Length: 392
Ligand SMILES: C[S@@+](CC[C@H](N)C(=O)[O-])C[C@H]1O[C@@H](n2cnc3c(N)ncnc32)[C@H](O)[C@@H]1O
Image 1: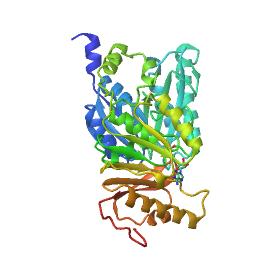
Image 2: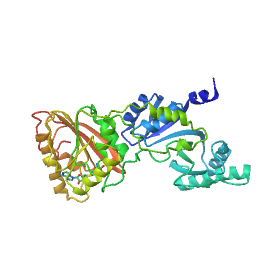
Image 3: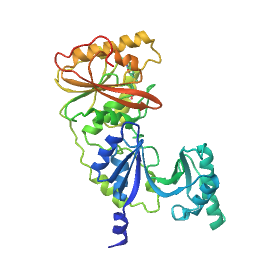
Image 4: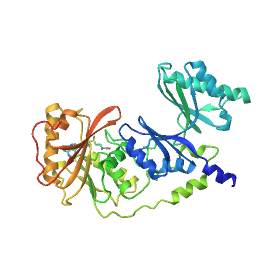
């Protein structure tokens, strides 16, 4: 077997990071690209694969934020032990003096309290190893390093990984403009995949803001990989980067060019519509998304079935009574204008969600940044009753 083929076949462990609540969805995405030994952790999954799996993970996974490749794991309880273990690693095999590096740290440990201090120790150890070997040291570049190193300490276990993604994967490259509270793209994709939408029936976001949800829905329905606009990934700067393999993977994609149903994005705000229009254009989806300036109660559908996914305002700017009234009106519109649809609402306001007044058929918890949100499903049958009082 040639060296190149052997290299391609070599299996190793990887970690895909995601948001709380999206682990199951990401596991399904991983299975679809052929990952093996998938194990669920908190906001992450570990799995086994080869470089093909790693490239595919970066290119295809809609709900992953980063794909890490662990290179060293050890037990430590002191800064000194951390330094010693990091310095022992053969960093010169990973990058050279002329390259730059950056360190990301996640620390949850009784032995190590400050992640910045951990980052500093790891940096010192790497720099000192190069100095001892070559009399010189590589530089740190936090924005655009050759190699991004991830340090994860949980209790007394330290895992050092190479970050194969570089920039976080949620940065698809289509967001050229943003409204006040845009959703993270990976979270929006996760919400759509959690909704169970069949990718073949009408899809509506009646409070689309900057357009993240309908854009992600169109990408999913058209089978366009989330990495289609992204030019660079961390692994492209690695010494073992296999550009032929990368091009083969990109060449395999079979996207659709036409949808036989509508994806509708609307919002009451002219500014939001302008921003969404710009983002839809840079996502190259102008043909596939109908964009309308409309209040939600003016929106309706005759399709008879489909899915609505929305994240209404949570009310930082609305008084509690107004917010409750607003959510009650959302419930009225869902009930009267969207018979046959499944509707999903994401909101950080538990009180307001209770005022929607429709029977909730699924209740999930997700996080929008640091905000804990409820993600609720309402099945809008003909004759769905508007219930008064709490739907808790
Ligand atoms: C939290 S933002 C949505 C953010 C969006 N998901 C994104 O990723 O950019 C809520 C949006 O609801 C819109 N909105 C508020 N009340 C509305 C109404 N009655 N009808 C339609 N849109 C409304 C706001 O203009 C705002 O753009």
